[in-house]
Length: 320
Length: 250
Ligand SMILES: Nc1ncnc2c1ncn2[C@@H]1O[C@H](COP(=O)(O)OP(=O)(O)OP(=O)(O)O)[C@@H](O)[C@H]1O
Ligand SMILES: [Mg+2]
Image 1: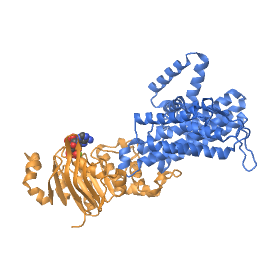
Image 2: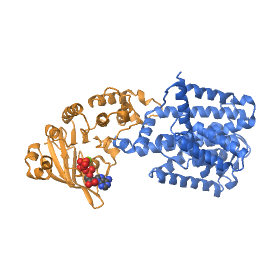
Image 3: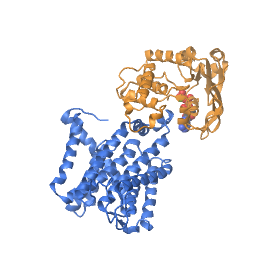
Image 4: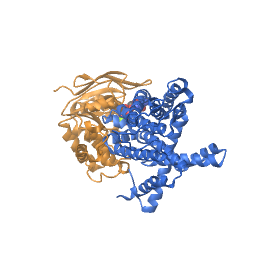
């Protein structure tokens, strides 16, 4: 096994053993972080690989979460597998439709238009009754994971949820790594590097971008479904612009376009947030300052720092 | 004379008040190398950009095998068989040399949309890429980053990428500029060979290369065609002598 897999596998082992500590609060916090990590990985497909800086990715996260909430009857459980598939599909279709409009723009306009569309989703849930308005909606009974009568796990037990989310994170990570190496993924990298040249070579760039935007939306929907299943509650804040900015920050902080960057960013940002909010009342100021410092001094994000440390420990190992 | 594969008429492109390309007519035929001459700023690159679709014409028509393509985007024209190289090297500097050519070859492959397979192991695009790199004289050191190549090698890669898409029409914007003598001679030989089976439009300032290669020559000045015909006619043309060839000698 290549040495560059060692550190991630050690980290994975640590995370896998962590619930044995019995610290329920931290188990739930880590679950939330891993959900955000899936969300951040989905956004990095756009930001890091395709060069599309979307500032509205929370819309699809929220659509996934609301799909579960709306499918859950008041006093009964929604089926896990069917509602999960539907959450992914609905989020993907929303991204497809939005993508047709926003992908005509680029640069700063793309950032603004993705934000504007996400705000439309926000207002639909905030100002109409479809999802309970600004109060949101409860998932009274957690989804039922049974397959043909066999129930592999129970969403009422935090440790079960923890492992389900961890498994999903690993699956999404491996899936995206595979996509990155595929012809489709190589085309996305080419588009990010030089769109004009890709078009001259015959690549229908718009269609590739739309496919990436749709795929990223679907994966964000999966993360949103997990959030609703874990917390048992959805409200419009899930798809607010803060959430879009938060996940974008995770990607940039961790290192856009690096395999582990978005995951590292999700952990770092959430933990920084926890740390400062318990230490000081001015936590937003300190959080802001540390983010500015990190971005200033590590333009490649945390992933870049990790690679530098690893290079100095093991000699010049390279990835990608 | 056979029917042209690619034919433009009245092709005009304005940038504000400047007509960079002004009512240009040109026809490219299979088996013919058509050289495009003209002083700096004559509109040669603009013409190539119009034919490739990188620029949309202000007016005029472009027909490929009889079909109007002037409004098609560059990717559709590329898929119809128009390949182009850029005057200013336009490669993927962060990718390996091989990946540059492989990606170019992938564009022709319906499996270009696959998300489950490993692109680096795809035999079809690998083989095409290898062949194109070989033709351009870049077989060695293809695992280097393209951005680290010498200027001349980058020019070779530029050509290899065009060849990897296996076009019928080649629009080459100063492919020899910046190449060493040896690579340049090799490229001239390659162009001669390709001219037998392709339609080629070649922008080139090196007169020796142009007169050695061209079946037809068009001379542009100030966005307009000054003269167009076989090399002997161009050489003998007084207008060309005055407007262009004269510059170099006097
Ligand atoms: N995008 C653009 N915007 C404005 N003017 C342009 C643009 N592209 C080209 N021009 C102008 O059009 C004219 C023709 O330029 P073009 O690049 O086609 O010349 P060329 O014949 O290729 O010259 P060279 O031999 O220097 O490559 C020049 O005056 C140039 O400044
Ligand atoms: Mg030019």
